[in-house]
Image (cartoon, rainbow, N blue to C red; front, side):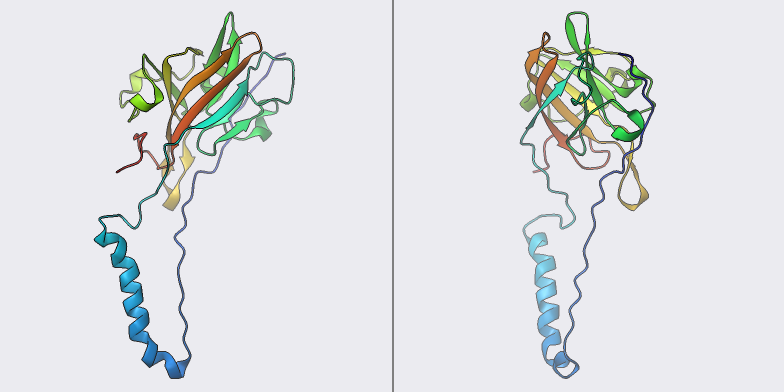
Length: 215
Protein backbone atom coordinates (compact mmCIF):
# COMPACT_ATOMS: atom_id res chain seq x y z
CA UNK A 1 0.00 0.00 0.00
CA UNK A 2 1.39 3.39 -0.96
CA UNK A 3 0.93 6.22 1.52
CA UNK A 4 1.32 9.80 0.33
CA UNK A 5 1.90 12.23 3.14
CA UNK A 6 1.68 15.99 3.41
CA UNK A 7 2.63 18.28 6.29
CA UNK A 8 0.21 19.23 8.97
CA UNK A 9 0.48 21.65 11.86
CA UNK A 10 0.01 21.24 15.58
CA UNK A 11 -0.55 23.95 18.13
CA UNK A 12 2.24 24.08 20.72
CA UNK A 13 1.95 23.96 24.47
CA UNK A 14 0.50 27.10 26.00
CA UNK A 15 0.93 27.69 29.72
CA UNK A 16 -1.63 30.20 31.02
CA UNK A 17 -1.01 32.22 34.13
CA UNK A 18 -4.37 32.56 35.95
CA UNK A 19 -5.20 35.82 37.73
CA UNK A 20 -6.79 35.88 41.16
CA UNK A 21 -9.40 38.58 41.78
CA UNK A 22 -10.26 39.41 45.37
CA UNK A 23 -13.36 41.48 46.08
CA UNK A 24 -14.57 42.80 49.41
CA UNK A 25 -17.65 44.63 50.64
CA UNK A 26 -17.01 48.37 50.50
CA UNK A 27 -17.66 48.78 54.21
CA UNK A 28 -15.21 46.03 55.16
CA UNK A 29 -12.57 46.85 52.54
CA UNK A 30 -10.36 49.06 54.72
CA UNK A 31 -10.42 46.56 57.54
CA UNK A 32 -9.40 43.50 55.45
CA UNK A 33 -7.16 45.09 52.82
CA UNK A 34 -3.92 44.80 54.90
CA UNK A 35 -4.62 41.10 55.50
CA UNK A 36 -5.20 40.49 51.79
CA UNK A 37 -1.99 42.29 50.90
CA UNK A 38 -0.04 40.36 53.54
CA UNK A 39 -1.44 37.05 52.28
CA UNK A 40 -0.56 37.87 48.67
CA UNK A 41 2.97 38.81 49.70
CA UNK A 42 3.36 35.57 51.64
CA UNK A 43 2.19 33.51 48.67
CA UNK A 44 4.63 35.28 46.39
CA UNK A 45 7.62 35.29 48.71
CA UNK A 46 7.10 31.75 50.00
CA UNK A 47 8.45 30.00 46.89
CA UNK A 48 11.20 32.57 46.52
CA UNK A 49 12.31 32.00 50.09
CA UNK A 50 12.69 28.34 49.26
CA UNK A 51 14.90 29.13 46.27
CA UNK A 52 12.26 28.18 43.68
CA UNK A 53 11.29 30.06 40.54
CA UNK A 54 7.53 30.81 40.77
CA UNK A 55 7.34 30.70 36.97
CA UNK A 56 9.25 27.42 36.58
CA UNK A 57 7.57 24.69 34.52
CA UNK A 58 7.62 21.54 36.64
CA UNK A 59 7.88 18.27 34.73
CA UNK A 60 8.78 14.66 35.41
CA UNK A 61 11.42 12.43 33.83
CA UNK A 62 9.54 9.27 34.72
CA UNK A 63 9.35 7.37 31.39
CA UNK A 64 6.07 6.55 29.67
CA UNK A 65 5.67 3.40 27.56
CA UNK A 66 4.24 3.37 24.02
CA UNK A 67 3.58 0.74 21.33
CA UNK A 68 3.80 1.58 17.62
CA UNK A 69 2.94 -0.55 14.60
CA UNK A 70 4.89 -0.64 11.37
CA UNK A 71 3.53 1.15 8.31
CA UNK A 72 4.14 -2.14 6.50
CA UNK A 73 1.36 -3.89 8.41
CA UNK A 74 -1.83 -4.41 6.37
CA UNK A 75 -4.21 -2.85 8.91
CA UNK A 76 -5.38 0.69 8.22
CA UNK A 77 -6.33 1.74 11.76
CA UNK A 78 -3.26 1.09 13.92
CA UNK A 79 -0.95 3.87 15.16
CA UNK A 80 2.39 4.11 13.37
CA UNK A 81 3.40 7.64 14.37
CA UNK A 82 4.04 9.44 17.64
CA UNK A 83 3.78 13.07 18.74
CA UNK A 84 6.17 13.52 21.65
CA UNK A 85 4.92 16.85 22.98
CA UNK A 86 1.33 15.65 23.33
CA UNK A 87 2.45 12.06 24.10
CA UNK A 88 -0.08 10.84 21.51
CA UNK A 89 0.08 8.05 18.97
CA UNK A 90 -0.99 8.92 15.42
CA UNK A 91 -2.61 6.73 12.77
CA UNK A 92 -0.89 7.79 9.56
CA UNK A 93 -3.57 7.05 6.98
CA UNK A 94 -5.14 10.40 6.05
CA UNK A 95 -2.25 12.87 6.44
CA UNK A 96 -4.33 16.05 6.28
CA UNK A 97 -6.47 14.96 9.23
CA UNK A 98 -4.09 13.01 11.47
CA UNK A 99 -2.25 15.90 13.13
CA UNK A 100 1.49 16.34 13.61
CA UNK A 101 3.87 13.46 14.25
CA UNK A 102 7.59 13.42 14.98
CA UNK A 103 8.56 9.81 14.18
CA UNK A 104 6.89 6.92 12.38
CA UNK A 105 7.67 3.21 12.52
CA UNK A 106 8.27 1.22 9.33
CA UNK A 107 9.88 -2.03 8.17
CA UNK A 108 12.84 -1.94 5.81
CA UNK A 109 14.29 -5.34 4.93
CA UNK A 110 14.90 -7.21 8.18
CA UNK A 111 14.78 -4.12 10.38
CA UNK A 112 12.25 -1.94 12.04
CA UNK A 113 13.17 1.69 11.41
CA UNK A 114 12.20 5.08 12.76
CA UNK A 115 11.26 7.60 10.09
CA UNK A 116 11.47 11.35 10.62
CA UNK A 117 8.75 13.11 8.61
CA UNK A 118 11.28 14.19 6.00
CA UNK A 119 11.87 10.54 5.08
CA UNK A 120 8.28 10.45 3.78
CA UNK A 121 8.41 13.79 2.06
CA UNK A 122 6.74 15.76 4.86
CA UNK A 123 8.08 19.27 5.46
CA UNK A 124 9.07 19.24 9.14
CA UNK A 125 11.84 20.28 11.50
CA UNK A 126 11.58 16.96 13.37
CA UNK A 127 14.90 15.10 13.60
CA UNK A 128 16.30 11.90 15.17
CA UNK A 129 19.77 11.41 16.67
CA UNK A 130 20.81 7.82 17.57
CA UNK A 131 23.24 7.51 20.50
CA UNK A 132 24.72 4.01 20.70
CA UNK A 133 25.77 2.22 23.88
CA UNK A 134 23.69 4.34 26.25
CA UNK A 135 20.61 3.90 28.41
CA UNK A 136 17.78 6.36 28.90
CA UNK A 137 19.14 7.34 32.32
CA UNK A 138 22.58 8.09 30.83
CA UNK A 139 21.33 10.90 28.61
CA UNK A 140 20.74 14.19 30.44
CA UNK A 141 20.84 16.60 27.50
CA UNK A 142 20.11 16.47 23.78
CA UNK A 143 23.13 17.02 21.51
CA UNK A 144 23.71 20.60 20.37
CA UNK A 145 25.51 19.45 17.20
CA UNK A 146 22.87 19.50 14.45
CA UNK A 147 25.03 17.21 12.31
CA UNK A 148 24.16 14.17 14.47
CA UNK A 149 20.43 14.50 13.74
CA UNK A 150 18.84 12.62 10.84
CA UNK A 151 16.16 14.54 8.96
CA UNK A 152 15.21 12.48 5.89
CA UNK A 153 16.52 8.90 6.22
CA UNK A 154 15.36 5.73 8.03
CA UNK A 155 17.04 5.13 11.38
CA UNK A 156 17.28 1.41 12.33
CA UNK A 157 15.83 0.47 15.71
CA UNK A 158 18.40 -1.27 17.91
CA UNK A 159 18.51 -2.43 21.51
CA UNK A 160 21.13 -0.54 23.51
CA UNK A 161 20.59 2.71 21.59
CA UNK A 162 18.96 5.89 22.85
CA UNK A 163 17.22 8.03 20.25
CA UNK A 164 17.01 11.77 20.75
CA UNK A 165 14.04 13.33 19.03
CA UNK A 166 13.78 17.01 18.18
CA UNK A 167 10.14 17.72 17.41
CA UNK A 168 8.64 19.74 14.62
CA UNK A 169 8.40 23.48 15.22
CA UNK A 170 5.25 24.54 17.05
CA UNK A 171 3.75 27.71 18.43
CA UNK A 172 4.63 28.33 22.06
CA UNK A 173 3.59 30.86 24.66
CA UNK A 174 3.70 34.59 23.85
CA UNK A 175 4.01 33.94 20.11
CA UNK A 176 7.36 32.15 20.34
CA UNK A 177 8.37 29.41 17.91
CA UNK A 178 9.47 26.25 19.69
CA UNK A 179 10.97 22.85 19.18
CA UNK A 180 10.97 20.30 21.99
CA UNK A 181 13.39 17.52 22.86
CA UNK A 182 12.74 13.92 23.89
CA UNK A 183 14.69 10.72 24.45
CA UNK A 184 13.46 7.19 23.75
CA UNK A 185 14.75 3.63 23.89
CA UNK A 186 13.37 0.32 22.63
CA UNK A 187 12.27 -2.21 25.23
CA UNK A 188 10.67 -4.75 22.84
CA UNK A 189 11.42 -5.06 19.12
CA UNK A 190 9.35 -7.56 17.10
CA UNK A 191 10.27 -7.36 13.42
CA UNK A 192 7.97 -10.24 12.45
CA UNK A 193 4.91 -8.63 13.99
CA UNK A 194 6.02 -5.15 13.02
CA UNK A 195 5.70 -3.74 16.53
CA UNK A 196 7.92 -1.62 18.73
CA UNK A 197 7.45 -1.03 22.43
CA UNK A 198 9.53 1.85 23.70
CA UNK A 199 9.75 4.22 26.62
CA UNK A 200 10.36 7.92 26.40
CA UNK A 201 10.86 11.15 28.33
CA UNK A 202 9.91 14.51 26.82
CA UNK A 203 10.94 17.96 28.03
CA UNK A 204 7.88 20.25 27.61
CA UNK A 205 9.93 23.46 27.86
CA UNK A 206 10.35 25.46 24.64
CA UNK A 207 13.78 25.05 22.96
CA UNK A 208 15.31 23.47 26.10
CA UNK A 209 17.72 20.60 25.37
CA UNK A 210 17.76 19.28 28.95
CA UNK A 211 16.30 15.80 29.31
CA UNK A 212 16.17 15.73 33.11
CA UNK A 213 14.20 18.29 35.14
CA UNK A 214 16.21 21.12 36.69
CA UNK A 215 17.14 20.50 40.31
